[in-house]
Length: 255
Image (tube, rainbow, N blue to C red):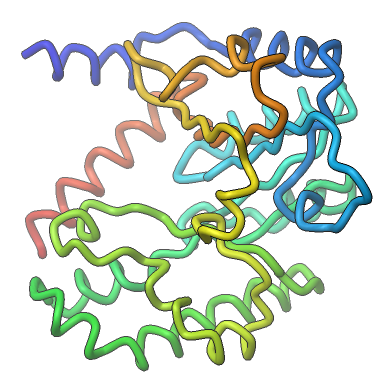
């Protein structure tokens, strides 16, 4: 019952936390952190200063994503925004890129394929990786064509189907030759990327909010921080929350 109440609060009652996000960017700037996107972080520098990398996974709620982008623009901060097929907004993505931040792909072809074909066996899903990779590349190229820009970093989405199957979406990028053909320099869960951070923080639903610690508490204690955020964790959006909850229920029943 407590879990249900927390979910209802997060989805429908939680006050906006965007003022806290604004304050975080200000505090990080005052503490001397360079706040940048994943793409910018990959560029070699002679000596890396204090760094806070902002990664946004746009699972839902484009409205709040746009608000977070506006806050970052006021502070002169860049970030990476990863959009699912269901949240693609090419107008917003072009604005993000024109400003100097990164707009890219939050992919989930493994989960989509498993649900669409009613596959519940991990070995069977992995045996279909050639077809899944072909779909990933087609989706990637469609997004690139719409943006008129090569996407060099992507982020794997985590779906309930992945958790049940114990097959992660980014397994399709474990083939170096396929990754090279797609022109992908980095997937955000690459070990080579994660090793460069002293601390990796992800936002969480109410009442935890962050794991393993609040980013404000990490400033000054860690030189290189990656902060993963999801717009839905920062402001309630009744329509989006209801849409996502209904979709999750329908997909689970259909699968």
